Amino acid sequence: MSNKRLIWLFIIAVIIGGTAAGIYISDTSASSTGSNAMDGMNMEDTSTPNEHMNHQAANSSNLESDTMSEEIPKPSPSPEADSTTSQEANSSSNHTLNVPNQTTERLQVQPKSGQPVKGFNLTAMESNLEIANGVTLPVWTYNGTVPGQEIRVTQGDFVQVTLKNELKVPVTIHWHGYPVSSETDGVPGVSQDAVGPGETFTYSFSADVAGTYWYHSHQESSEQVDKGLYGALIVEAKDAAKPDKDYTLVLDEWINPEDGLNAQGTSMEGMPGMAGMTNMSDEEMMSTLYNIYTVNGKSGALIKSLEAKVGDTVRLRLINAGYRSHAIHIPGEFKVVSTDGQDINEPAVLQNQLVTVAPGERYDIEFIVRSPEDFTIEAHDDNKYNGQLVIPVKVEGSNGKEMPVQHTNLTSFDLFTYGKPAAETATAAAEKYALEYTAVLNSKMSGDQQVYTINDRVFSELPTLQVKTGDNVKITFVNDGEVDHPMHVHGHFFRVLEKNGEKVNSAILKDTVLVKPGEKIVVSFTADNPGNWMIHCHELHHASAGMAQQLVYSDFVSSYTPGTSTADNKPE
Ligand code: C2O
Ligand code: CU
Image 1 (tube, rainbow, N blue to C red):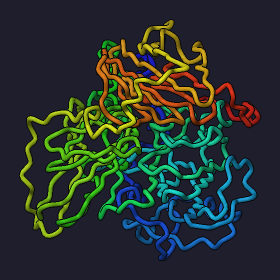
Image 2: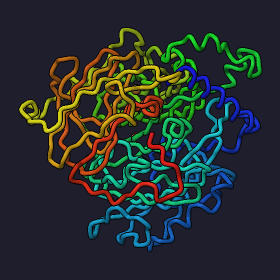
Image 3: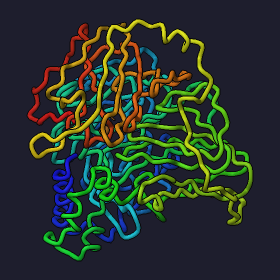
Image 4: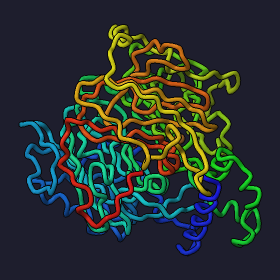
């Protein structure tokens, strides 16, 4: 993003904050947000329903379930819920039934006979989020919370999610990393029209692949994801042992415009050293502007503790919904059991290593609690506001005793040398590729705008990449620029073949790979999911400023014709 655009973003954030009668409402009523992601709560538990936390959602959720033929179980309260607050999420149906929803306007795929169907409602709506002590931001949410309601199902379920849009702008839902069919991919103008204000849209897919995924809007996504339109999608493996504790940890960064204003004194004219800012590099500007770091929508002292007891196997599902990488320090011994939803083959035990989670990526960590001592999970890297990213882990019976932890001499976890390579990896090198494509990533000025480019061109100038079903595809990402580019491929898992000219000796599959300045990363995949797909940087400002390209199957006929709705489609 150009300096000018960033300054605009900054100014707009300030204006919005001002007109919303103060971003820093001392809000006490909306603080029940974001809890279901933390505790892995089973929404099928029955207990008392709560009132809606937000009047805007008062009649939004139950109605959408009328098409379901079974009674909706009573929702369970959030652990934080009290008599005046609750999670909108709770009123969504999350239940099993065995008949397909027949009245959905545009049902993309159907459940197999006898397949359990899990129905969810996600309402895109405004809310206020108390993000840090004394800081409440106006946010856009799915079901009133940031992250939005966690969609947690079991492998083999058929998932139907009805999106209702109560915002004033069009939105969609993209299922990041999940191999859904093209019609369910949620990219406006590519797989569907954006869902306009007041409209609904049902996404359907068979949850055949287990793992940690996430969902987010793909309409003007750099802005909409930034404002909170995202949530976790967890597909529990059908035949695997469940961990004793299972925590979803969604990382993000936010802009606290008052910070700058306060620091510099006051009004628009006196904007925080604007002159200084224009001389900053993009990286400096991004690292300065995004000054609140959150886990599940909460920063600093508001971050909820994780709880465990000695002997517990704890699984942490780290998801980066933000635009900066975060290097996470897990004290003690741990394993990285999965990345981007895909299990790692025979993961070794690690210690004193930082796991860097790039934008869009996921890492699942497992550890066993060995002693009755509390500890904290922290971020250790160059980011300015790491002090806000501290996740307490409270171990039963610790009586406040802290685990001795080494915070220095930590090395970086290397995914590409981790785990035992599967036998099939050996054959990967012998594959013939129907498409071999090199994407050189960079940025340049176009007029007074900084654009982010693939092979010197922006999205609208780039040709679509053409494949047909069954083709092997090889893509080489080369970062010739000065900032990180976490590159994401929709609809497919890819294998990383090479990094900086060296063969990667692992069987790891990913959907998002971080390409740092100067790096060259070669990936391959088989075109096994016919459709129209996107490949783009998940620093979503970069995608919206050009760093995106389409991958199209020549043998795929889409049932979608763009432009039949009035909503403006803005795919990035
Ligand atoms: Cu998570 Cu195209 O995005
Ligand atoms: Cu990028």
